[in-house]
Image 1 (cartoon, helix red, strand yellow):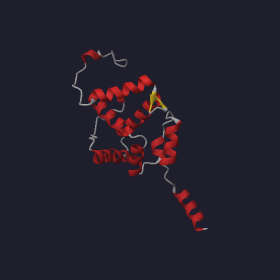
Image 2: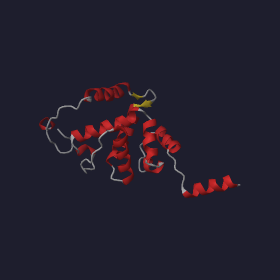
Image 3: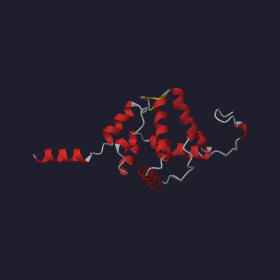
Image 4: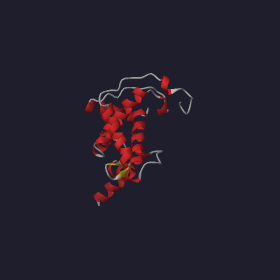
Amino acid sequence: MCAKCDFDLCKSPRYPPVIGTIGFQTKINRIIETERWRGEHLSYEYFDILYQLLKFLRSESKVFDTFNSLITSSEGLRVSKLSTEKDFGKISTVEREHLLRIATWILECWPDRFIELCKAVNLSTYSVLKDRKSLPTWFRTLAQKQLHLLSASEKSILKKKHNE
């Protein structure tokens, strides 16, 4: 039964798994069982970052539209316009699987692929970290070191120091 609406989940429509779903689920299960991701990060931190990426992919912000377009063009992954439902728990299982596959694809080559995508669309530290207090410290540090875009005042100060 659904915890929110009491719908009998046994009556949900069933869809055949997309090729690779079992392998995808196996990776997720391994992270849960070992309680680690990439040997150094706790599994719940992986899921915090995965959830963050899902928010990026579902964002209506123009900068994240560009982020999604880059994924589509560079790797041939289809990032389609999905339902406008804000609550991830309320979108269809097909859409969830689609989004999860893209997010896990980004995490496969961590952090290089994420940084490359962010830099390609000039995604600033602020955009990545804004309103996201539950992100792990190592993720915040990575964003601050790798994605920092200088503000106009910082550029001016550096220019003055360089000319001195």
